[in-house]
Structure formats: structure tokens, C-alpha cells
Image 1 (cartoon, rainbow, N blue to C red):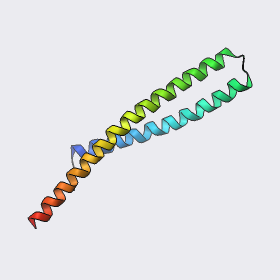
Image 2 (spheres, rainbow, N blue to C red):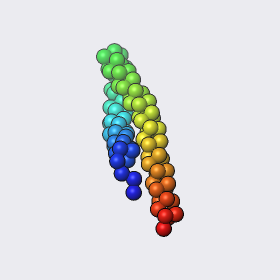
Image 3 (cartoon, one colour):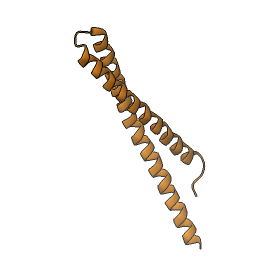
Image 4 (cartoon, rainbow, N blue to C red):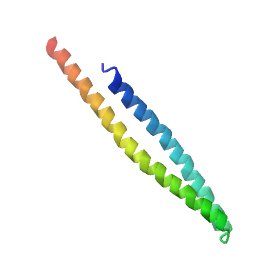
Length: 94
């Protein structure tokens, strides 16, 4: 079984991705609430500015989440490949 830094790194990246995904979901809810407020009071520029800020934050979270997701997937794939090599070596040794 693969242990050590590569596995820990992959787990850490996966956990960070999960936390970021949860943050993005919460931010999407916040954007929806702000959109509803803007629709209720269309002339309120403060609500519009808050909506724009919330949308920008959601966009940043989404972009970062996509990047982190790719890194986590690559790290997990590397660990899986390493595990397969170790398993093959053990089978050959038998």
C-alpha cells in the first residue's frame, strides 16, 4: 500500500477541494439571495454592488476550485499508479 508524502499530499488536496466546493456552494446561495434582493428593489445601487461583489467572489472560487480539482485528480492518479506498480512488483516477487 502506498504511504507517505504522495498519499498525504493527495488526501490534503482532496480535502482542500472539498472545502472549496462547499464554500462555492454557499457563495452560490449568497448570489441567489442577492439577485432576489436586486429584483425586489431594482433602483438600489448598494444591493447591485453587493451582488457584483458576490458574483466576482463566486467566479474566483469556481476558478480556483477547478484548478485545485485538476491538481487533486492528478495527485490521486499518481498515487493510484504508484499503488499499481507496487502491487505488480509484489506479484512478480511471489
